[in-house]
Each structure stands twice: as C-alpha cells, then as structure tokens.
Length: 390
Image (cartoon, rainbow, N blue to C red; front, side, top):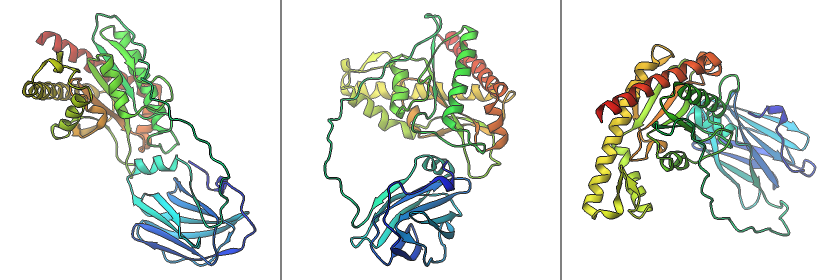
C-alpha cells in the first residue's frame, strides 16, 4: 500500500500552466479534460480507504463533476509539480488502461469493477504512467534478445525415499503479494509460513516425503506450480492460500477440488503439448491408439478427481476440531493450479486474511501448528486408505 502523501508524479514537470477544466465519471471510465495540453500523468490504486489517485503534471486544480458508478466522491489538491485528483470508491475498481487524446487535453481512464482480492493486488502494483502531447521522447532505444525460458530447478525432497510424496505449494509470491490483511499482512508471506509449518509437521510424522514448490519469496506461474509436482511424481499436491472478502465478517477455512466440467480442456492440452509421449497414470500415451489415448486420459482424470475429493472431505473432517471452517468445507471450481489430470490436488483456503480474527490466527505460531496438524492427520488417513485399497 502506498501512503497518499508519499505518491507523486515520477518525472519533473514544467511550471503550472494548465488547469483542470472538467472531470467526468461515466460508466466504465473517467475522463479528465484540461484547458491546455498536458505532458504526463500517473494513476494509482490505493487501499485503506479504497480510492484511485491521478497525478497530473503541470496542472492546477479546477472544476469537477459529480461522482457516479463506483466513484462516491472526487477531490483535488495542489502539489509541488501539479495536481492530484482523488476518486473515492464506493465499490472496488481498478484502472485497466488509459491514454491522452491527440491534442493532449483529455485523459481517459478505463475502469473495471473487481473483487476485494484483485483490488488489493492492484494496489500493490504501483503506478500506471501516461504520456501526453509534448512529452519528451527518448532519443535512443536499447534492444535485448529475450532469452529462452529455463526449466525450473526442482526443489529438494525430504524424507524416507520409500514413502509417498506430498508437494506443498505456498500460494502467490514475488511480484504477486496476494490478498492483504487488515494489519497489512500479505497473503504470500502467510502462505509460505503455513506451508513450512505443514512440511515440518509431515516430516516429523515420518509417514511421507515432502517438497515445497517455493521455499522463499519468488513468483511462479500456475502451471509451474503443479508442473513441479508432476515432475517430482508427487502422490498428493496441496496448494495453500488465504481467502479474502469485501466484508470483514467472512470467516473459515475451505478446500477446493477441480470440477469435472473444468478439467477436460487442460487434460487435452497436456496430452497435445507432450505430443502424446507423456505418462498419464503410469501409461505411456505415445504407445496407445488415439481412441485408447482419449479413454485413458478420461479414466485417469476421473479417478484423480475422485481421490482429490476424498482427500478434501478428510481434510475438512480433521480440520473442524482444530481451526475455524466454513459450514460447506469442500467446494469445486475451475482453478488452474488443480488441473493436473493424473495427480490428486487440493487448494486449501486456510482462512480469511480479510477477517481480523482469522488473520490473527493464521499469523500466530499456534494457528499455523493447528493448520499443519489438520493436514498431517488427513494425509495419514489418506495414504493409509490408499495402502489398504491396494
């Protein structure tokens, strides 16, 4: 979050020569008009309270219009090198694009209403800058060839090699902070501490091997997360997250597994990408005719989803005596991180970081230990049942 008083236009501007002529809030956009051409501006999404600030270089405050849509009020203030126009928000909204008109006298910002989690992410991303008429152009440019993406180094696996492997994924990380708590806690930090607590609890039990997709503050795209687990041939994948809502009363943990409708395209994409040479459920698809190949993927996918759902129900049973949970604990959704067709996968929403009590619980060592204990109990029962079934 950026304190309002610390934000300013990034580059120097000339003496104040232009004036805000009009500010119009229309459906899906904000339009700022000036009596003379403007060189540059920057827009910020700010949280606590929610607002959008627009810094315009070389401009004096002027007229404004009435608020509307997600904007509840409009304010202006003179700054050392221009004017800041602040739009107080009645509902969370972000600036997705912006540009000056050809004459440099009109700046149009495109608005999109979002949920609380996306708004929190946008507020952590910094300014969007816009160049107007007469802004200085660079006299040179630097080019750099884009390197080929490197395959991620696999994380360390700890535990007895004879035991099944559980991969724990700490959600978000790096440039993606995730949701923000009322005390400023970032989801990426909370999930990493919880993931490490789960790892330690599982290793102490001695029943499984464990690996973390990330053990520090780094960014991983979603396919990399379950891709790491697949390359390690994980027997179970658990992605750890914190929920968030626009109202602070929402509370309780829940677990998501992949819905049947959501899974087909990703399975087909996986098989196509691997040129039918990937091993799904222990069978090399490259050795199978097309008709058999499709049936094998479908069967592996259905079995994986059933196993995932079974683990989610177990996790709910073990978690309820230890941590706050939702009344309906197991849910299904189209979540990319769950779309490996041959690896049981669960996304564990450990609680609401937007709820002060949940956030305090998840931020405490005692809370993390209880979350870890609930996972450990569920994992032990899960693999005991799998062993008995074999």
